[in-house]
Image (cartoon, rainbow, N blue to C red):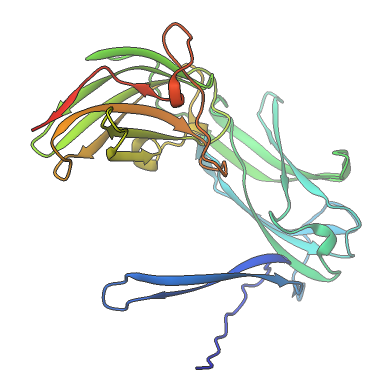
Length: 320
């Protein structure tokens, strides 16, 4: 049965390779039936039209506008939308160096792609390219007003052209804890030099298990890690219930943590479908961006490596 569909492309779509996915699902139940994907190259670009350059960086590239939030909280990674204007086809894969400058003159910099997934060398002259990036802010960045500016760097990382001030961002302080609360059970395990598990509190409900884990940041974490909690049978390693997530119900990613910060997080494991038996709880961290979901190395309180890079809590969970 031949069929055809038209997908309008948004203005400023950067040239590059895209994934086109067709999915089928049951209309009544929304149950997925299957999907197919293919790589679709897009080489065309939106003409500049009547857009004018507000910030000229090099003879090749300028900016019509830059949009960003006026306020962020320490550790946030706000989205920045940059309207790039291509006056002549770039000869290098330029990147953007963003500057946050405090009133004291102190500067923090991040170098990011102009439009992730799209090389400027593929941008035709006379085009408009919308670049969306996230600008990570240091979790320890002092609260205050910062000017935001940008400059281009070449493939060797050297600045080219002029630096342009595009506005100001106010950084607000974040409420943090640095004191370990009272613990039902102390653990003192570490994970990859990133996290410390101080201990936990456990509460058994009629049909669930509520586990409050108390973590510490040994340093500002270098990526957004995910934790896992497995309720497993130690006899055959059968996992009867599990939780994989980001602390505070996916609202507090680890790149927002400051060194020495203490983060308490409660997870709930349903027990209604767990077969009768005796179970243990295993805890660990992994990088979700890793193709193999590689776990962070786990060590006990004496610094000895732990099997399977997980900490097995001393509590035994009995299901009648």
